Length: 270
Image 1 (cartoon, one colour):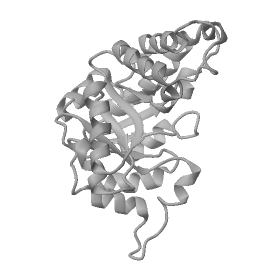
Image 2 (cartoon, rainbow, N blue to C red; image 1 turned 60 degrees about the vertical axis):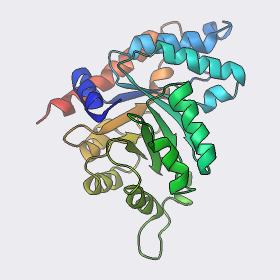
Image 3 (cartoon, rainbow, N blue to C red; image 1 turned 180 degrees about the vertical axis):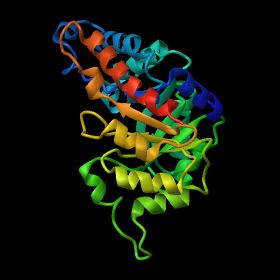
């Protein structure tokens, strides 16, 4: 998906909501758990309920890989349910030496036809470039994540005064551009998010941490929106598990609609 297509769809939907499909068989409604295709049925219901209010879906592959070959089949089936208009993210956090990254890129961009994949930059340029060679596909590079452990490495200060995540952002500007490179920036520190946006005004940010993790949609929007929106706010648990009863899809729809209405205000504000 091109930058222009993505922006146009965001403005059409009046939304920058990304629904995270971190579907856990132990957390979906009990009445579904007995089904042979429980997660497939759950994912389809969630997608059908939320598609009108979001622009992207993020499949966290760990929740599917845990089931072995069956999990990959669930991913394939889930992708079939997602409308062609919507941006499809493989949250796989890959990153390895070049020839291995070649195969990871082939897996997610050719075999499964995702629009984007999350990539860890720890191994450097040659581990990321294989993903960037695909036309109209996107790398979403981990920069500053919202978990506690981000302090262990990402927020360490280098001798030149930069933090590690700042070095990642700076160096990666030589690898790609706003047409094929996005960044994961956590929602739990709006001030830092604002400072990053000021330095990188054109790139898309994928922002986790809103909802169940405590991030605030309006604070994130104020800090990180640019002239073309340039933002995906991801919500997973707050939508997926809005209810554990038979009304789970209806409650998921209401939660997604509520977030979309908040986003619409920001998109329509001059």
